[in-house]
Length: 222
Image (tube, rainbow, N blue to C red):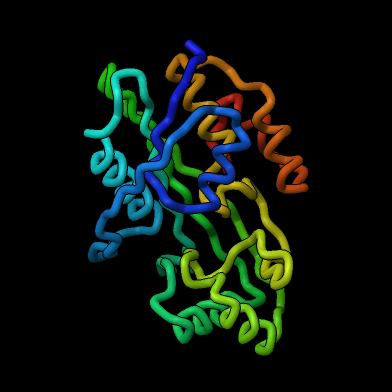
């Protein structure tokens, strides 16, 4: 089965952009869920719980032949979860905290097929090292407003601020949607193969991905 129509349970412009690279037809129906972190909840448990919550929240709107795609992304500094900053002051503090250091970005995705009652999950983790940007650069970036709707208060794709020095893993996942993890899940569920996806993703991001072949083979990486 290769004729797919997806409902994207997210209003993230980055997820919409990345999903469009796949060539899969989709519509957007955002899911509004409580993103409060539970006591002693780990970053990976947190993103997986929210992705599942978004899937359940939107599942009633899915047609018989539609697939539901939900995702959640968070930045983890050790065990500390850095979500979207509440204001410019918090964004500034997050960027200072992350400067010149390594952290991890976790993205969980859920694909739900209501026609058969099947739900599949994926978790992608990318190691990110931030560069030693200056206080002035932080101030200018925060003033731009770009940090407020992003976990960890930064967008890896921002070419002016370019906050990231090095990543190990999936670039698209740091933006909010690990496309090869989505593709391998669709294959696992019997929805055909889209061989262009890893190459289109790398072309769009200008990133030579070192893990896509291993991801598509089903290896627990990234």
